[in-house]
Image (cartoon, rainbow, N blue to C red; front, side, top):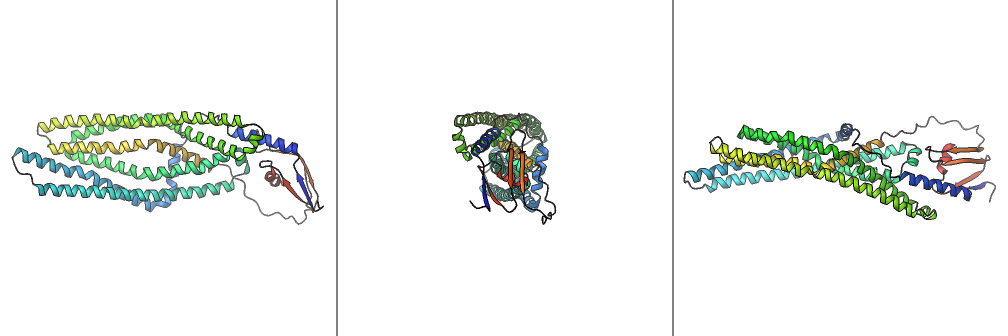
Length: 429
């Protein structure tokens, strides 16, 4: 070995102690002690931050809104046209007239054209929503990458790699899927409900009031169920991060796991975390799953009320048979968007929980920026560590009682296993 190059290797005892500390830290980070979650902490704040990410896509968003509204109105218009066929058939039977097939055919052609336009506009709005969502999450990934470049090593030392990867992949992807699947559906839902109410009031005000009375009941029931399920969806996403962190650490440190005979404990930790995830997911999906049948039951009761009341009013000559048929169709149209939203309620809640986890990364304390370069022209270059101890977290000592002396002009190499503190030692300089 040359005098100019001295290799300072960590003694085997120190390597072993570091390995033990790494194991303790790794398994500690994968602990299954998950705090009880009461749902997204800042539901409204998370929504606002998501909307801010959509600001650069304002033109695409406005285009999607316009196309979605137009497509929804095409669908709302159809029952008002089809009622003419029913009224024409009833009139032909009552007055023993021939059915005007040309007139019926024209109405069917008009209704078919409106349905085609509805499908075309809905498809187009879905394509715009998908493109917009991918641009949003693309910027989100860049922002996360820039943020991770500015956080101190303390964060990486105290956070599982799998947990970070889970936020970068699972959580961000879930946000993307929800944005592209729900934004246009919500716009269509609002437009359809408003359009249906307008058309029903044109036909018969009393039947419209019956339909409107079902809305508060639907909102109260849905809100009560969603509040209970939000906590479980937040817990589910948290446990997914824990499980991913544990798996990543066990595979990355597979040799250390075998060396310290930690296989059984690793499997036990995985099984316990997996059971907690199963329990949280099952409860969350059950609560989200009962929303749709509950809404369908309320809508069916409303449907029966419309049929009975509409039949009575038609019998006394207040409205026509065609108006009843149109009102029944509008009742179904009114219920459909609400049922669609209930179908994706679980995805929306998971997405909000994921978005909140992503945004929490942006709140991590950053490293202080480097100041102006210091003049080192007079430095001799002699470095000495005397009884140096260092840790990023209070419960895990990374460097303990380190003594090292390097003379000026000497070149050394600092070697050791991953996590032994090589980078930290250099940063301490």
